[in-house]
Length: 356
Length: 93
Image 1 (cartoon, chains in turn purple, yellow):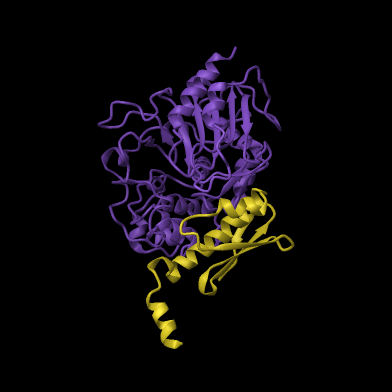
Image 2 (cartoon, helix red, strand yellow):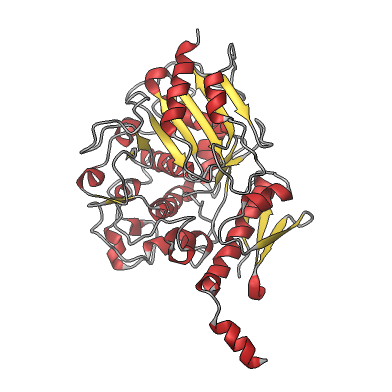
């Protein structure tokens, strides 16, 4: 088994080392938007934490948020479900090639061809419409799951959809896949760890004391979108991934899990639906700055090629850059598409490199 | 009068279908509750935070019971309830 890296792990709070501010970061992230603007235009950062060499080197909040405010993580939550999946695999409670039907009972026969790995890779093949604002709400599968007929038991709702493609053949980003995975992981871990398994296994050990993980009507974590935590605590989650799934010198994720999660999946390389060239590539519930077929530039050309991220609606992000020993957490309330991940990463890396 | 109601009903835009009103009230109750009691922002902030298009659901915060009730046209209502450590959940319909 690979040894865990020897680093200084954060105790109950992050060590800080703030030698310098950054006009470059300030001017991009906090351009002085009018928070009363009814159109909610522009880059509306409300929290940023940058951790370099295990220390907070830059931190700022806006719009009434503080270092102790929980923020909705939206789809950053998906990477947390990917992590809990890895933890379940590590203790032998789950296998990648296992059918979803071994954990979630009473699904249609056709759904039993879907495996844990298919869900991790957004390749279940379930019929799904991942649409939010700007589309007709009543045709969205996500909204039906979160606020409509799916709400009482979201995992079962997803697992009951008809298949559009054979499982494992086609990538399509789907909150449904993560939500069914959340149900599978719950069934695997709850017997040994109790209903608060995310807290006892992950948030507790990492010291993410602010974390609140909301549940659906069946008591399953809403793993697609409803984790709430402070940016400082989300940085702990990034730090876990920065260090190969280790915390305090102890391996929480299986050997090789992080490595295997940071490769574009086979289904994605074979056939990607609803994915545009230039977007980051999907790994296992995580987004990668790797070259994709037919595109010469990296998705985030200004950032190192080993950059990866958990990303969420309204521009939430937990970015990890191992080659720079950096974790960046950005929370926001962006309602248009002005904010660019690449621009944040460019300025954050330049800032980090300018530090002693 | 009945004819008038029928006329109104038949002219009811697709936007205001029962399905949409149901989604809108559930969304507003859930997110409004999480905003107020999990993110611990004030009511005015949360009303703006949950505003989406079409803007058809309003919320009322009950600080005593830690619930948020959303209402929309035609008597649609939904309540979400906060439990410490757990966050918010919609009440069963």
